[in-house]
Every structure is written in structure tokens, then in C-alpha cells.
Length: 165
Image (cartoon, rainbow, N blue to C red; front, side, top):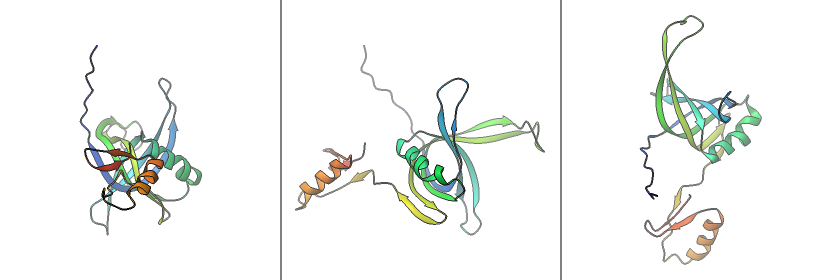
């Protein structure tokens, strides 16, 4: 028996975009999952362009934000700063409409995290930082340590900071 650890290459992309089509997908075979389309903004702010990315929601915190803040009010406009993993292009052939029979490309990815969220232009969510550094000689180190541990942070001796798992 081997204790060999699987190793992966991670391609993480961060950006800002509109959240569209949040839904639960129930395939005929396999487990149901949640999906969202992100209209990612790029280019000049005065005339932005959009890249549409269909994402499977894999981050637990991201799913909680979508279920508790987005799903109850699907008519609102939500803009989020997001982290998407492992983006790739998937070719397809249009089956209907003006482009029937023509090739197309769909961007796919995995929604890992929602870093911040605005509803109709108003900020409503900001993710907790992934690490917190407190100097060891801080007179309030112990009380801050207890507070961070109660919020799920773990001390990392090597980096000398508290991290969220």
C-alpha cells in the first residue's frame, strides 16, 4: 500500500462578473450539482466586454452564498468578485437558431469562491480572509488567537499565521 499523495495543477482565475442562471442540475446519470453562469467583465471599464463561463459550484462557501443570498431574489442583479478553477473551452455545434450547424465554444470552469457580492449595486457580502498574520509579540495575541480559532482558523507554524482550511 502506498501513501503517495495525488498532485494536481491548479489554474485559478479571479475576476468580476454578473451571476446568471443559478440552478440545480439533476443529470439522468450521476449526482445532482449546482451550476451558475458568470458573465465575466473584461476590457475598458467604460465599454466592457463579457466572457461567459459556465461553472459547476464546488466551493462550499460559494454554494452557501448562492443559496442564501442569490436564489431567494433571482430578479436582482448580482455582481461578484469570484475565483474560478480549471477553466477550459468546450467546442459544440449549434442545434437551433440562426447559427444551426455552425461550431461554437463554451467556456467551462469550477466556481471555487465568491470573494465579494453586490446586489443591485449595494455590497452585501465579503469573504473572510484566507489568512491572518498577528505578530507573536502582540499583547493581545492570545485573545485574538482564541477568536480566530473560534472562527475556524488554524495556526500554521511554518508561515507564522492563521489560515482558513
